[in-house]
Every structure is written in structure tokens, then in C-alpha cells.
Image (cartoon, rainbow, N blue to C red):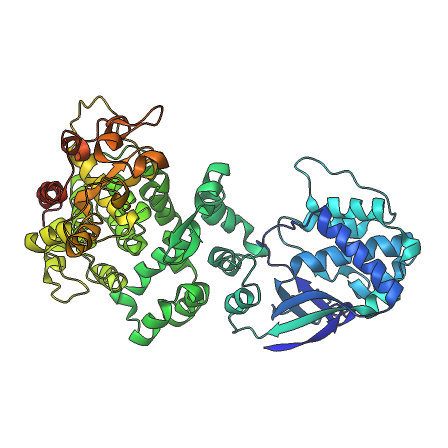
Length: 572
């Protein structure tokens, strides 16, 4: 990597082609940024002081093809927006000041092709602007082009009398960062733009797999699934939390899809490479390394199955199911709540493997039920999740594709990071574990969805529609009977955080009700609803609402009741 100060004339030198990756994001700058650029350029002319316009990251590009006149090529990793805007600005200024020859000399290669070649989304509009000979607004058909909007804005708002071409070109500075062909542009881009929009894995892969010369292949293998229509775009661009970060579903798909190759024994991937391939932040680089090292450079090994797996992913993984009624029977609907609602995304590669390779629906559902039981038992006892990634990818490695084999594999784990809690430990978990609210809500919701009668008069809502309520409030000292000793107070403070004291309700209680005594908390007060109304029809809280008092004994009894159901629901 080579970083240095550069003028616009150092970036475009009459012999270098600068290319926007063909499938890169569209140009998106708006009037506020165009206006700011105009003001900045007027300031440069007034003061003759250097003005920093931002960083430009360029990577070594392709070699010239026969008939092409440029001597070298650079691909834009970062800086597309500001370079595009600056060239449009200079184009309009040169036309208004009668200096089109100067523009063509500096920004065309051998006086012919423009030295900045745009990607698929903006190439036509940009070329149209560059071919324009008069500073007049251009028609902008629907859907409009932001590139043409920028041109029209400068035509309309630029006062050429306040500007000087040479002063601007000699005082506007960039930090130019040049990368070699093997350097990881994603890491460098994301580091420099840590507070902005990251360069996504899918964007890097799209430009790696396809080019200007393979548009038909792009249309059939990529666009037809990832960009088919607005519904598909919304789905693939949806972000979910994985660990501490948010990632788009399309990037999560490519992570999961890659694991199917990494765990395939026929490629005989080294342990060192497997460790490297596990890095999410280097996924695009890992794809390239895998294809070059283990596939002889043949991209079709990845592309051949990509579309089928992507459609399977769309049918299998539905974050929106967390907002819908969850059925009682084992299946992918319940597992979506586990994956997305309870943020257990490490399951995704193995579940995708099952969805694509187990053709019997009943067997698939049995496998999904085993996975739900495994995750939920461990969640109740507060077991570690740190080894989940290795565990679930090992199931792909060993081709585990039936419920009995899956159950046997999971039961064979005898260390703290993989074992299955038995019924005694499960009971202890219900009695003692203090889970985070999300986990407690998930445990109770999945029990509720299984045990409620089919003919219930109250519909079960989606997981996301419920909040968690402490039946004995954390601030019990205000309105509840006091304890006999300080030690009893501590025991009560601990017990009220356990699952036996927690309920899911579709609407949170008003703050004035939440900390009231048990009688008012159930019945409500004035126009403030209590649990009798808010929790009506919920089986997991029905028995509690029949009680005149709510004490430590009742909490323990409910813990045992919930556990008895959990042992059956999550039997292994």
C-alpha cells in the first residue's frame, strides 16, 4: 500500500484509466453535498489555500485489451462519489469558461475516451454528460439519474465568475492510496471508513465474479435471484444482528454458502486455511483464495450451485416470521425464532445444508426440532455458545443429514462447550438461571406456542410482539409485603429474576401498574390495564393469575411447572 498527497492531475494523467467496478453502487450524492462543493471551490479561489477533498483508494486494475489506448488501469475502491462529482463540476466550469480543450486534454486518454469509466448503473448518464458541448441542463427521464441531477445543479447554480480552473486544480488535494492486486481492499476500506458505510462482501464478490464482458452470466446467475425485483432486494438487504454487528442477509448467505465448500472433504483444505476462512471480515478475500488455491481458478465451482442455494436460503430463513404466529409443531418456523429472534445465527450454515440436502420434510422437521431442543436446553442453563460455530460446521464436515445421527452427535459432546444439559440440570436452570430478557422471553414464548390449545380464543402473536414482565416487580419494596430479614430480601431479589417469575405479555404494563401490589397488578387501576387483561389467554401465566397472592413459593412452583413442559418439548 502506498499513500500520498495527490492533485486531480496526479489521478488522471492522460494515460491511466480509472474504472468504477462495473457492479458498484450507484452515484448517490445530493444537493447538500453539491452546494457544499461549490462553496468550497469558491473559498479555494478566494484564499488560494489548499483544500482537502478526501481520500481516494485505487487498486491495480486489468491490463489494456487490444485497441485500448490507456497504458495502465486503476479500479476505484473508495472515492467514486467525490471523483464523479469533481469531474462533473470541472466539466461544467470548463464549458462555462470556454476551456473544453483543457478538460479534454486532462481528462481524456489520447483525446478520446474519458479517463473515468463508470459502472453499470451510471455509465450511460456519465458518458452523456462527458459528450455534452454546451452548459445547458439535460433532460432527466424517469427514473432519474443522480449523475444528471448533479450536472444540472452545477449548470444552474455555478457562477463561473467566482471560479478559476487552475486555482482549483492546483489547490484541491486528495490522499491517494494505491493498493497492489493482492491487498485486501475490504479491510483497508472499512478501516478508513469505520464511521461510514462498509464495503460489503456481496459487492466485492459481484465485481469479482462478473465483469463488463460477462453481463449475461451476471443476469442469469446473480440478478435473477439477488436483484430480481424490489421484494428480493428488500429481503437480501435486510440487516440482522450477528454478534455485535449488523449484517445484510446477502452477506450472511455468502458466509453460510462458503462453509459448505470449506467443510467439503474433497477439497482437502488445510487447517491453517480453515482458520483464515473463518474470518467474516475477510470473506471476499477468502473466496478468491479458495478459488485460486483449491479450484484451479475456476469460479464456476462456486457459481454453479449459487443460485439454487440462494433460493433455498430465501425459502428457509425468514426474519419476518418473528412477527408472526409460531406453530406448535417442530419446523423451520420455530427455528427462525431461535435463529433470528434469539440471535443464534451460527446455526445458519448447517440449517442451509439440511434445507438443501434433506428432501423428506418430516425428517427435516425432526432435525429442526433436535436443534431447537439443543439450543434451548443450553440457553436455560446459561451454557456457553463460544464453540457453536465449530460444532455446527463439523456437522457439515461429517455429512450429518438425519435426526438420529444429529441427536447422537450432539449427545457425544462431553465438554462444557458442547454437552447437552440433562433433565436435572434443566430443572436447576429454571429454578436458578438469571437470563437476559431476550432469552427469557424466548424460552417462555416457545413453551407457550407449544402448549396452548388449538381452539384458544386468543390468537398467539409473533415473538417480536411480546415483552417481558416480572410478576413480582424488581421494586417490590414499595408495595409488597416485607421480608423478615436482610438475607430473605437478598433471596427474593435473586428469585424474582428467574424464569418462574417472568411472563410474556403483548403490551407492556403502564409504569404506574408495574410496581404495584399483586392485586392491583392483576386487576389494573382506573384506565390502566393489569395482567388479567394484558395476559388474557396466555397459558404460561394463566395459573398464576388465579392466585390471590404471589410469593416465593409460587415462583418456585411455576418454575417447576414450566420445567415439566420444557422437558417434554425439548426432549433429546
